[in-house]
Image (cartoon, rainbow, N blue to C red; front, side, top):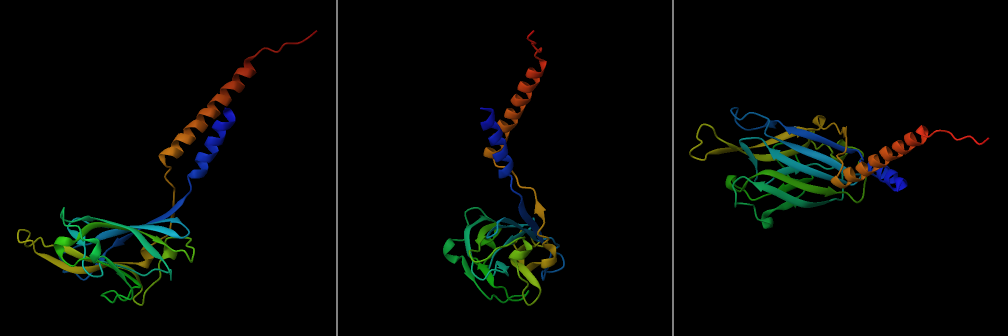
Length: 229
């Protein structure tokens, strides 16, 4: 029994594998001066050598949408985007999946990107959060930074944003513009992995086994020695 508990502890510890992650702040924009950064963030987690997750989060007062809603320049030459999901700005106005498209060589304010995710154009169809998974079956990444490649304007990511206009909030007025982040803001740092609930359970069993083993040894040490004459 103790051997099984010790094995569970070892397996639990092994399952806490480190992951690589970084958060890119979207701070540059061609919006009017009254719209202050940050406009949002892009969090990237490297799950393994060929899979990464991406999550855009708009800052308060901003949302993502329109053509070229999310532009990225990946280092991968052959990849697959899956698991696309979003949170609509206005409940019940999700952009239908038929208007989501992925194009290449999108030209925009911040240069050309090899990947552009387009959404339905319009403020009321914009989203406050957007996420997807990227798979690269033909190559290996060793950091978040290695996922990206600089474009001709030294950018790796940009997004099309809508901004609530504080000068005319009742009229529903808004301004549009592009926000971007630079490659230097992607450190590709290593962060501690977060154990799954099952892993915590296995580790708990393991620690219980270690405690029982320690208790057994202590009890054995308390026994008086019996000498035969």
